[in-house]
Length: 197
Image (cartoon, rainbow, N blue to C red):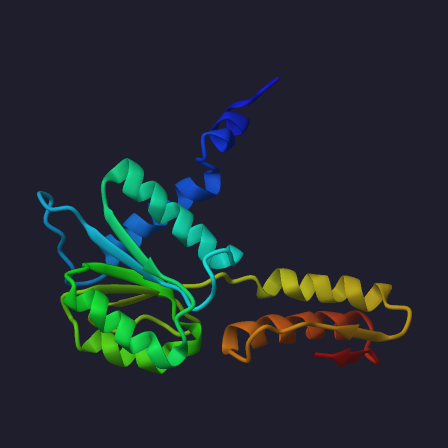
């Protein structure tokens, strides 16, 4: 028997997508000083450092595609944008009239914040471990260090060798926070545990 959740999943609308679209709307509305004309199509762009298939960025991309289809926004994106090109791509979108630009600025924190200040009429919303910046730079992040700590406790208890390991994709504060929480959890249950990164 198919329930409502199964039907919505089949239709491409998951509970996660609904929450993301809602969060996107709230974030855009919450950015100070940003006003969007109701009679014009909202132009939204996304800048991703990774390929679009990467799960974290893909959820943002899927939600924006859904907003394009169901809410009528204009949506354009760039993927695999290197840190050295991040500011250039931001400028291109701002100069192209995009009112909201979002994505993952983790590896390009300084560059993205500096560029955003140059375009105060554009709302910027990026995945970031640092706080928002006036007047137009909003942030979001996945605060999952607590489950990483619990996973470390499990690993510390289960390890037969007394060594636990973590694979860290990037040396950025957000990844470091998860790795450190994991190892802290392992050390909580096994004070002599050794760690490998």
